[in-house]
Length: 166
Length: 144
Image (tube, rainbow over all chains, first blue to last red):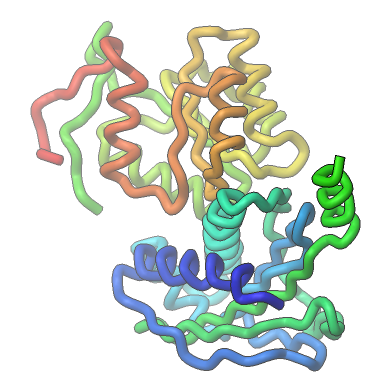
């Protein structure tokens, strides 16, 4: 997976988290996830289709999810509150939307699908062309994990190349 | 959250009434809190484009804050349908996806403005004043 695809997501996550949490964030561990995805706690998944396809998962352990949601909502939320899960979904939505905006300006075209809660304990295993990159954002409220698996849509690339030759 | 000088309707001095459309409950609550700091009133909420149309008919708000990516019917299509029936509708698109063609598509179909998420209250406040134009007036109160 090329860094040109990843960097806009890192920039967007950094900006959205910093604004929502009203405190700076730093990038901690960055690793390739070659095994099946294992959910850490409250996870939201967003699919993108178009010139680049794949999915982005935001994953927070339950206590961090409560702290982050409480900061975003500016009020203390209990762990059972649906708003905690809603906030993680909206966080994923805002980061992905901002990143897609930057990538669109570079000429890639996408469709972003509404976020869904990832309720399964495991996800599908990444493959050679959809290897997942896991980035840990260290915040004052705890660690926020962004798991990205994206690949170029070969059919769309072929269509573009053919159009370019005409 | 910061308090702003209240924006009222020029015609009767009443609070500006808002319809908030977003599939995220969190986003709706967040916008509702901002509206409160602007001295506005929440006229209704909707979680998708279809509901937005029926809520517009029911509440006739002064301003609609409309997300784009939503299930069932997306925001741009809903905005177009509302404006077709109500050319006076003031719809502000509020979305995390803020690339040029999305903005142009929204404006071409009748939206008055576009605000990118995460929403900064001071940005939305200025957009609201701009979109209301002479139909809105800033009352004396908490300073922005």
